[in-house]
Amino acid sequence: MAQTFAQSFASARRVSAPIVLVRTPDNIATQKLAVETALTVKSDKLPPSPLMLSWDFARGLTAILKEQQPKLDALLTKATLPVAKTVNATETLMALLRCAPVGTIAFFHNPHLVWSNPGMVQALANLRDEFKSTLRMIACLVPLGTEPPNEVKHDTIVIEDPLPDALRLSEVVRKTITDNGLPAGDDDLARATKGVRGLSAFVAETAVAMALRAKGINFEALRDQRVTALQSAAGITVHRGTETFVDVIGLDGIKADLARLKTAKNKVNVVVVLDEFEKVLSGSQAEHGDNTGTAQRQAGHILRWMQDQDVRGIIEFGHPGVGKTHLAKALANELGCDCLLAEMDKTLDSKLGASESRLRTLTDTVDAIAGKGGAFVIATCNGMAAFTTEMRRRFTRGIYFVELPTDEVKAAAWQYWCAKYGVAVKQPRPDDTGWTVSEIKVCCEQAFDYDIPLVQASRNIVPVAKAQPDVIGERRRYAHGKLLDAATGSVYTMPGQELDQPVAATTGRTVTNLPD
Image (cartoon, rainbow, N blue to C red; front, side, top):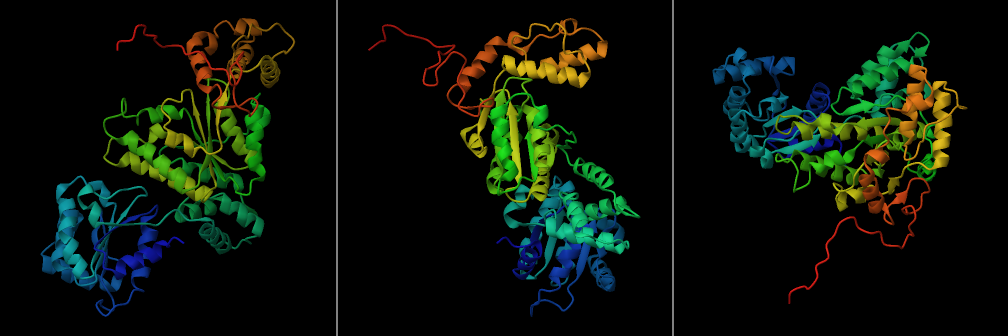
């Protein structure tokens, strides 16, 4: 069983780890817990009340325990470092190296912001052996996903204080409700706890407090607070639509397969949509990837995360406009869980290591909502070339090919979207050969918007099947006999082909009279 943060920090303290990187969503709460934990570690080599210090860019070096202020004053006097100058991280580290007493722990808040400073990194490296031999520690409190500088990576112990689980959040919610004189019934407690999953304890407490009313919790207000908080993380958008499988025209095979998740023993707590995922993966390919290594590291992180957290998922491969993303969003409402749109491009940052940190924050948030095994990922794509074998294997529930709709499905789509937009169903329709459901929707929307007949509304619509006929054929040939058919749930076969019949390649070369 994995250790808790308190257990891990206590272990680091006992073995005199000199440099500890603490990843946390809440620096203040983590520092408080770490101080409480450190004071429980007893040793003949430690003073009865070791010095506990805190450093940040605004206040510099301060004593965490008020009664220890004289000790800090004496330290700074001995180091000839004025309090005003302790805002300089490098000078503060060197002063601590020279003058901090045995057993001192100094918590540095957000030092990653100056890790590009050679002096700061060198100061950390300089104190390693001295601090190790004197039970002193520098604890760097940084955001989730942050990595230590390469120069001291092998000298640093990394510990994580993750986002709170359901049990911890339940305690926070209960206390917030009862502290305000309201009863915490089991149903409201469970609903409110679910409503703050993915948030830090402090933000969860604030969100619940803001949602309290004289008669209890306003759950709509709580949801609004949670959505705002979740979307403050780069790359996360919370989908709030109400579509269900009824609103997804066709795709009966994949809908039947996914419907089994409703009664699965391992409950799905969040659906994560990786839309047009091939665009993200294409940057990780050796031949034409980026030259910074960011895309490769992001792809590697997704691989490890899906495996380590037992993430289930599917790939939807097919033509644009056939309903791949619409289905993914509808699944979340069918299951009664959150739907997060993971916009990987928004996790990119020019600062060294920032992109990986943002992506780690994204997946940590998913983990906090879902729990291990509770996330279901749907990756949509228009091409499969960028998917490595390793990546495909992570999507354990299948790879589906989403074909152009049949005439029967298109007829149902006309009925649905005409009714949705209040357009007369019984009127001449345009020739919809090769149309997708999305193109039918656009036609109906334009007919409503401009108050014109469907035939007239179709004049500016060029279906993808006519605009890209070669690409349509290539996708079909790729899927033939290898992928599942989203319409039937069985193995996909090209129109007019048998399953065991080879499909003619579009390119190739025959060489006659081969040389000896």
